[in-house]
Length: 572
Image (cartoon, rainbow, N blue to C red; front, side, top):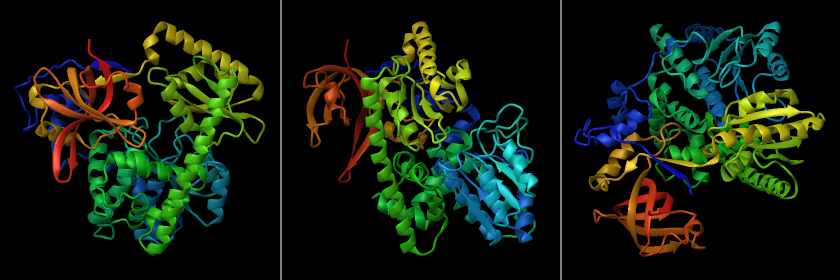
């Protein structure tokens, strides 16, 4: 059961905005949307976007790409092995293919190349006759590799969205909204979002010359890729990102991309209206599985081609089968971790789990799942081929994993990451020291603030009588697409009477029930997969507080208001 944090209302209940209730406008404000952008946020056709040429080095990068393409010089798009990298590579490769046949792409392997630029891959690219190397979704932290590529005679352009290492900018054309001195108004684009801004720049420069090879229609057809990347890479769904995803979802639902349609068919969602949740929980895991288990280049091949439907169906089949394998390997790795925790002293405050044979491609997911279940930072460590140990860690909100690692940095060969996730390597003889020091550091933080390990549920407000309506729920949908920094709003009803409670599902794992508060309005509630957790709380006649998403259930042409329950507690 989570700690409920119900926000304090600061708005005038009587004052609507653009026909939207004030309480919903307050939700928008609370998410950092500036006053002058609220109307655009509520619009069905938002216009908020920024001039791509505000990105430092974007204009000369676009000019160089056009020049190389027109002169027939070979260009290579260098990506990354996750969903953002796959979509980024697909987008820029597609744009350059409109201009020249002399373009290729390289997607590194997690297992042989690692993240970002590496010299082995650069050698291969040079041998392939490439004269211009441009990265997408990587490269900000590869200044030495950039110098190596330049020493071989390659021109290099870096496009990325990741944070930089202090004072180590790559010495080349470098497009990244987070780079020092960049005045681009929005810093949180995905890697594919940055690639799209570059494509915008290319389109505008060509149009100025009277060259209409890349029409605005062709450009807008790439927004499906931007939507997938933005949701998959868990960047904030606010400001320009929100609009890119909104229009990108429209493109996905027009079903214009043949390979993506093949994948939707194999995932049995081709007849559905795709939303951000479908991307996050269905599309992204399948695309990410390619890089976790094998080669993400298959994903680019699937998304970049519009010909030979039978071939694309085969690629989609392979993608889905790879994700099935990923799930199986993930379950095996999770089982090994549970066994290791059961028989060994992994640490009470921050489990450091040593698991020989843990699969590198899924260790991060398993660590994340354990972190959520245990409400503690978790690291999984396994032997590497070179005799060292390699590991990955995930942490709960409030406990900064990167800062913890910095405080015991002398035990590592190397480490990197951010507050919530880090990767590292260390010598085998340092494992016990690492484990001991992590327990001490986390214990000290918990003793200072015990709430750090407590799950918190952030609730917008208790529903008023006039908010328990289909119209109010429809207005909430104007805040879509939902995702990082723009989550589905949660509401609560307190001191409610339970009626018509019954279990559903083959094992009775779901519950449907009605709640009626003092205002006499009854709302249907549904709780998925957690019936056993609330068995002694939800029963006919019980008095409960319920929190969840206000939803519209459409069934056989009938629309009914319901709450998709997130938590339940006994009323005081």
